[in-house]
Amino acid sequence: MKTLTLVSVPVTDQQRAKEFYLKFGFEIVVEAPMGPDQTWLQMRLPDNNVSITLVNWFDKMPAGSMQGMVIQVDDIVKTAEELEVKGITVAKIDQTPWGKFASVTDPDGNSLSLHQE
Image: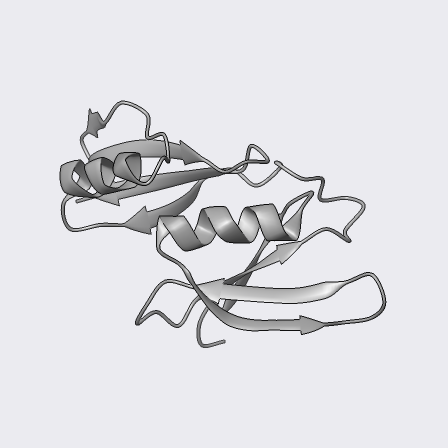
């Protein structure tokens, strides 16, 4: 095994979720039809090899069930301020022995954690 390449993020509305993740800082890698009612929507942070895909077709993965995806940042205070200006709510920054964390929730309730070592 070599590396993690793709994480599925369960959403109800791919377009609404896409707009959130674009504001968050992700870019579109691929957006293509997969059939009459499905779209492959793959995104990633700039200069990053790990992608997310916004999915709505897994019965055992309901929208909002993804919790705890951690995103490394250099300056959590600055990043939180930048996200807030874009209309994305960032929870209070918590100081822990393993770094600073702040939670962000997407429109479906999926949880992301900003992390600064």
